Image (cartoon, rainbow, N blue to C red; front, side, top):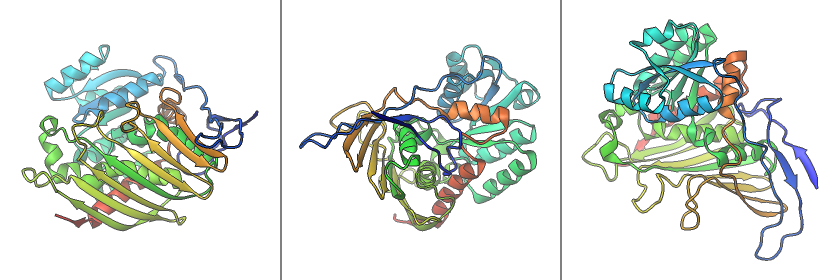
Length: 388
């Protein structure tokens, strides 16, 4: 039995000294029809990194349901949710019903004036996230927004200027990797060199539209930014993470509205391709075409090709096989491996992010990485050819 600890590399997400999973290796030659008995075992799931009251945060503007996931993950990592601010009574009541000990703020200013609050989490209308974040940072707080963080390059430029001037953090809830146990475990496998140098990442990001439940702003392009800006932001973040690229150029982008003529500003299909500054490539497809028969909201998959192997992630379902998600399929020099990691990896980003806010470090994710992912999806959106 050969046990070794993952090493860390400079992909901008995992920093030197981070606690990463250890691999348990027990290799035997592959048996016909069976995978080689090579087990990759994650480390124990992360635990709270601070005691109650040591990291106080607030939540504001609940225009997207992701605010619940943002707050829940911070609380599970040890954070203390003190304040909630939302002008809409219905949204506010639903939030308070879930987080029963939270105090209702009369205004955002009440939150920003509280010296105990270190961070404001928000899920505002997408086009309003940049200005809100700048206001939060100017008040001396760190900011944690839902994706996509911006709808224009001007908003991004303003946020970059404010982070540089204030030293505050503008972090983004790129949940399709950060809350995916398969996605986080693949991060570790890639960074340890299990599949060699990553050559290409291909991402599939289908979502269920659930049209009657969507707010009006969701169908207004100026407010949601377009499909490559919106869902595509996840794909850009994963590409940078898995390849280690620091920048990329858009080689192709296209969008269309194929099935929703009654909401003409909605883009229900998008695709894009990139070439990274290290020679790696990326192709992704995003859409709102998840059929009613699928048991979950989307069959999200990621394919990572390396020089020594490849990985496929089936994040939310293994179609017609398992209704559970978090499946990692790995093929390397020792065999074929199916790694079911549901409930085994956890979401370490949030604890690392809390410590980054307290210690002014960048172990969870660098600011440059968060902004570059936003920039790439905005550039793809701006250059996209319209198919319909």
